[in-house]
Amino acid sequence: MPPRPSHPRGPSAAVELVIDELAAGGDGVGRLDGKVVFVGGVAPGERVRIRLTDEHAGFSRGELVEILAPSRVRVAPRCKHAADRSCGGCPWQHVARSAQLEAKQAQVTSALRKAIAAGLRLHPIHAVTPDAGWRRRARLTWTRGGQPRATIGFHGPRSHKVVDVASCPQLEPALDHALAAVRRLAPALGVGGEIHLALGRNDAIHVVIEGPCERGAAQALVGQAGIVGVAIDFAGKRAVFGAPAIELDEAIAGSADSFAQASDAGNRALGQAVKAALGEGRDRALLELFAGAGNLTRHARALGWQVTASDVVAPPRPLDGIEFLVGRAQDAVASLGDRWFDTVLLDPPRTGAREVMDRIAAICERVIYVSCDPATLARDVQGLLDRMWMPIWAQPLDLMPDTAHVEVVMLLEGPVRRAPPTPRATARDDGHDPA
Image 1 (cartoon, rainbow, N blue to C red):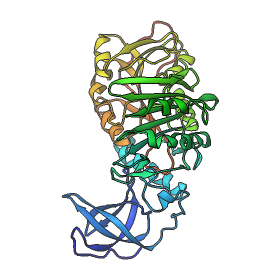
Image 2: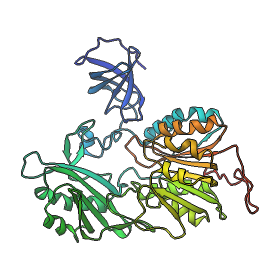
Image 3: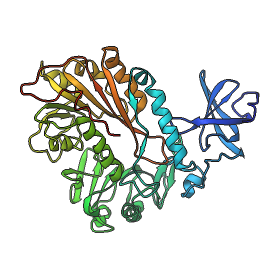
Image 4: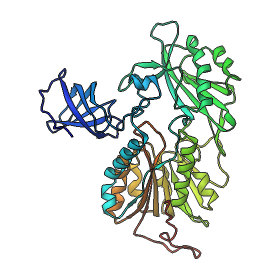
């Protein structure tokens, strides 16, 4: 590797930089005079010329000017918007998938280093989706800006600018076909907003328009390109044309703005990892927090668990035999009093579940934590480790290729065991390993 040159610093200075790795935020990372520099559009191991754009106390940011020595893991992007770095949706499309997986494994390893030191078995990352054509959900932005037609697309990297996107190679073909139909809304859209697209079972597609839109144009979409339902959300009111929701997964219904995993293959792999952590329920008690529409709940019920689930909104199609608590996770946990659970399963948003970790440590024997952010996962489980909980295993999953996103399923066991009402295996005996 070439020596790292020392350069004058300044907001417009052009400097050379060697890229060491890919960062969790999607940028590449180099070091200039010992200070970390984040740069988009680069690959590990390459030498580049950049222009420094932002200086902070602990790091700098720069923009790519020229690739002086390309990395061996640099590949040709399949999308023109990724090639010219105008779209921020796929910041790693220029990096070989194998190198993406290495970077994600390294990020999880770094985040969970304390748990690994405490005995955690960190498994190799599981790549479960194809390189392209995997996305069954999309959220697009539109802006009008006084023009006769709205611009519909995705935001640029670290920008509020909307890039016009006619087709996206990451979308499943049926959803990409529907995008072409949705784009015909451009003259009927107001000043700005968002459009949600979702592909469900049997290729049914649902659309939600968040913002001002002519009702007739929205209604006309029903029946085109597999679209079975369209909703307009504007000014606190929802107008629905056609189906109000679709079956996103087996027994799970929702509209296009409901949360669902971005790919079908990824969601199946996530379910398998969670089932491996749960094991057979045999009527044992499970508390599930951040349960959503029941994507993971259904697997627990199929394994025989007695499930108490919670989220801020009740699922549109409740699952039979589930006790559901509507409200914030911390309020749901507080309402349970001294009830005891064999396991707590939680799948919080990216911000994590700091507000409930102390409480759940006192009401269960095991914790299964599903995380889309290794850093907040590490922060939240540290409190359990400090209480002598044992980290058993963690399984990283690459559910979103060409992005820095990585999912992790982690199993931990607590120091307290309670005698079950009927004979059964101990928690450690059924802490199944997915590998």
